Length: 443
Figure 1 (cartoon, rainbow, N blue to C red):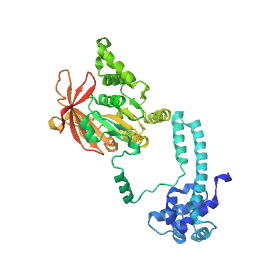
Figure 2: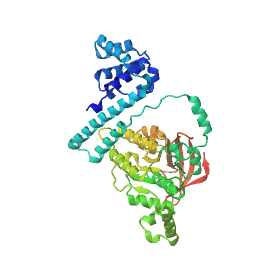
Figure 3: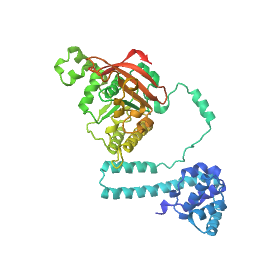
Figure 4: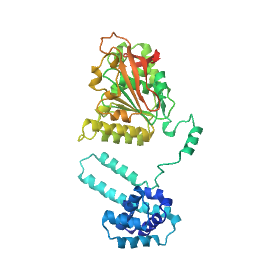
């Protein structure tokens, strides 16, 4: 076990902190008291960080007094020991080497502990193996990061000059740029981009899932970004999702496609074949198991990305059907879900396109007050908070019986973190499952 400890490196790094904390601040931030083997060294680390937090000076006297205050240790013995650290045979310029040794030893100890815990959990836990292993894998990934913490605060001047020189360029995590399929919505939102969580919300039957499929079909046909599309639907079976995609992409009647294929004409079949030919070989995945548990979704998405790479779009249809920790109420569960979706978008650089229902309050309003608002998002305000873009679909004259044919729908961009809010008039051809912007456009 001697290879798991280095008391001399611990003494040396603490001596560097005590002699000149400013030169070693980034190393101090990156170290935790649990990285040290010796109990006294852990006490000294805690004391130094407490002093820094309180804007107090760090030296032999202040550290020993802090230890006495927080742990009731005898000051004389601690003071003498701290004095020996400051007079040790070490070189302050080698602080980074001491840091690397400590971090390496600590990582090995933590990995051993995590492995023992993993083995014990396999014996006792009722959780599925995949969940237990995923938790262990994440923990080992965190342990393996032994690097120095990045600076939290940097000078703004050089960053501003660099940003001005890069105007028009797209950030690395925003290389995915997706057409919203409606020109004015593109202008309002500056298009959908990788790293964003976009929420499309509406009452039942207005066409929110249809619109999301329209965005996907358009990207498959005309998009230039690398990467595929992963559709996770907890409401529709994979065959229904597939039919919607074909209907939108080929421009054929959804009813004929699903229930009356004999009514499909020769030119319909020609468009279907043409659509299939254009998307054949492209990476499109649709879930076949309709689990709606967040921990299982996390596992499956992680597995998909490891196997196929990061998709450009992940569709989630819809948020409120997902279940998180059932010990929490629905609002708390939705908070966990939207936070996961936002982090998924941010960490992978893909576009997460999520569908959500509205609560009942929106259906009770009429006239000019009928337009949905952010507070109408079902179950939790976290949907609004975590989303980069929120788009409502609102059908005009929703309470009246409308004849067959296109329905008037307003696209209301209610939140656009990097754009602006606004309304866009469109029509919905329910038979061919497609939305088109009308000339009146933005108002």
